[in-house]
Amino acid sequence: METRPFGKTGESFPILSFGGQRIVDEHNCTEEEAIEIVNVAIDRGIRYFDTAWIYSDGQAETRLGKVVKHRRSEMWIATKTWNTSRDGARRQLETSLTRLQTDYVNEWRLHNVWDFARLNEFTGKGGALEAAIQARDEGLVKNISISCHTDPQILVEALKRFPFDSALIAVSALDHFILSFVEEFLPVAIAQDVATIGMKVLGLGSLTHEVERSLRYAFGLPLSTVIVGMENMQQLEQNLAIAESTG
Ligand SMILES: NC(=O)c1ccc[n+]([C@@H]2O[C@H](COP(=O)([O-])OP(=O)(O)OC[C@H]3O[C@@H](n4cnc5c(N)ncnc54)[C@H](OP(=O)(O)O)[C@@H]3O)[C@@H](O)[C@H]2O)c1
Image (cartoon, rainbow, N blue to C red; front, top):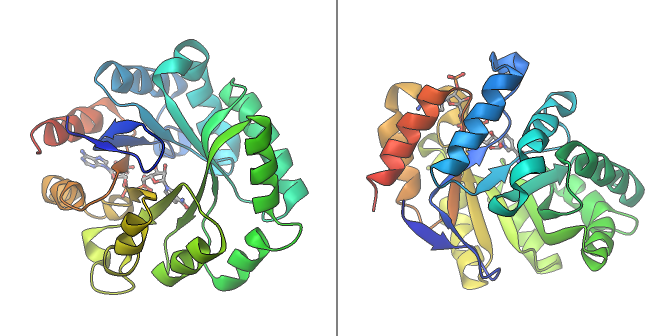
C-alpha cells in the first residue's frame, strides 16, 4: 500500500487505516472476530487504529486492547475524549489507557467538536485541552488531535487557538459540495503540516453500493490517511485490495 507522511510526527502510514468503532456486538461483530480482524489488519500492513472512549460503552476500546496487549509496538493508537472539561477528560483518558492495556496513546483527540460553543468548552479555561497538554507533558499522550464532522470553519478556528498535531475530518464524496472539509480545511492543514485523517468515506455505510469508487475518491485526496470502519473479514479484504491497487 502507498504510505504517506503523518504531519510533523516523522511517521508514515498506509493510505488505508482502521476505524475501530464497528468491532462491537451492536454491529454483529463478536469479540473473537474483532480480535481476528485487528490481527489480520496488522499482518497485512495496517498500522493506524482509531477508537474512542465513548464507542459502545467501552467495548470498542476493550476489544482493541486485547490486541494492543500483545502487539503494542506495531500499532499507532488514537483515542478520544468526549468530556470537554479538564478533570472529566483526564478521567476518560485514564479509563481509555486501562481498556487499551497500554501506558500511552500515540494520539488523543478532542472528540466531535460540533459547534463553536463546544470548541470554546474544549479550549477554554479548565477545558480538556489543558488535560491534553498535561498528559503530553507526562508522556501519556504523544500527539494532540481534534475531530469534526459538521463545519470546517470550526477546525480553521481551532488551529488558530492551538497547534494541533492532527485533525480527523469527514470526507465522504457525498459531503463534497456543502461545508466541505476538503475545500475549506485541508489547504489550511496542509500549509501548517497538520496531519489529516479522513473518515466516513462510506457515509456510515450508506455508500456500500459504491465501495470502490468511494475509497478511490478518498485515497485521491491529499489526506495523510483514511480510516474505514470495518466489522468483518470480507470488508477488510475488499478494502485492502482497493488500497493495494491504488497509487
Ligand atoms: N471523530 C468522530 O467523531 C467519529 C465519528 C464517527 C466515526 N469515527 C471513526 O471513523 C471511522 C469510520 O467511520 P464509520 O465507521 O462510522 O463510517 P464509514 O467508514 O463511512 O462506514 C463504515 C461502514 O461501511 C460498511 N463497509 C465498510 N467496508 C465495506 C465494504 N468493503 N463493503 C461493504 N460495506 C463496507 C460497514 O457497514 P455495514 O456493513 O453495516 O454496511 C462499515 O461499518 C469509525 O470506525 C471511527 O473509528 C469517528
